[in-house]
Image (tube, rainbow, N blue to C red; front, side, top):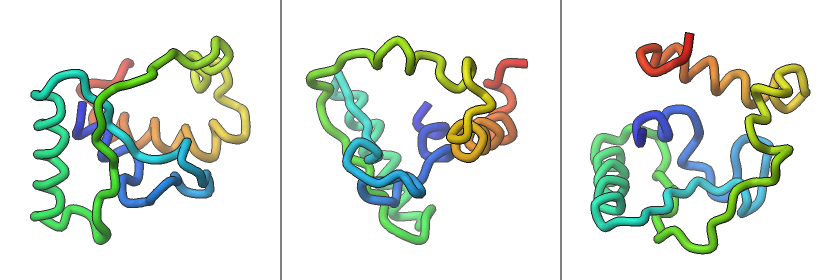
Length: 108
């Protein structure tokens, strides 16, 4: 799951993803166990050592707090709205990248 996470978005852009700017677009991993924290920290450390990206990974790794599900209209948004501008311009390329890179995990 961490590999997928780090491939389908830019973990080097602080508080943004492409043209979407603000702390709500930050890259973050929120853990509930020490093992999850170590896995996230470990892959970030490895990516830094291997210079996996040309810039440092800025993904925050914090304990999960104050979690609540997104509003109903955000649930399955891409699946329900594939022809909306944002879905076509931003989400579809990420879904395509996922399907190409991780075809063994993608739905047919």
